[in-house]
Length: 180
Image (cartoon, rainbow, N blue to C red; front, side, top):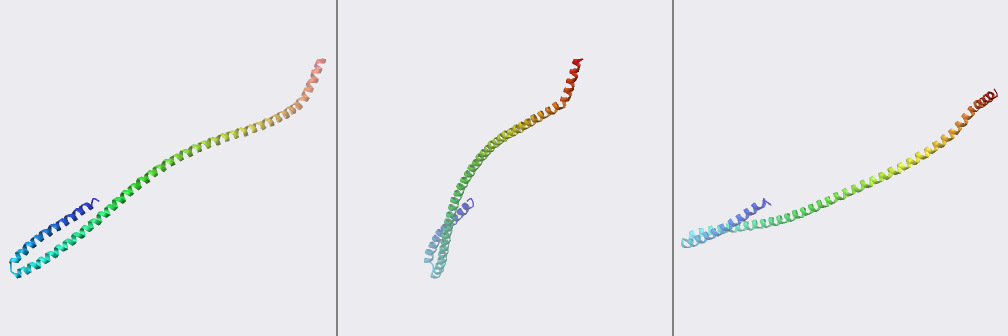
């Protein structure tokens, strides 16, 4: 937009210059035409020829000015369209940024919720695992105790069997000691 303003001013200046030139040439041509009337016919014909050439130049300058004005109008329309498009794009960009920020907030919330849920599940799993482990350990300990009790009674029976002959011998020795 900064580049278009100087170009626009240039075209306006050219147009004003052309109009000023046309006014001056018209006045000069009229003046010469009036002066030419008073002069001889040959001079009048030469002046008429110059006048026609100048009028042709003026007409050409008018056409150029008109073309420049049309070009300026077209460029102004294009500038307006581009400005509208830029405003629309800026609005769209702002909206997309807002949506992206909202999505980030949602993602952060979801991340926090998932983290909390994972922690809760992990705690439940740990508690369940500990309970299962304690139950398994308890049942294993009970089995071991049962086996130990059975083994203990077997050992006691075996020890009684080993000690029985010694007891009987001691009983006999004790009986003889009493007799003596």
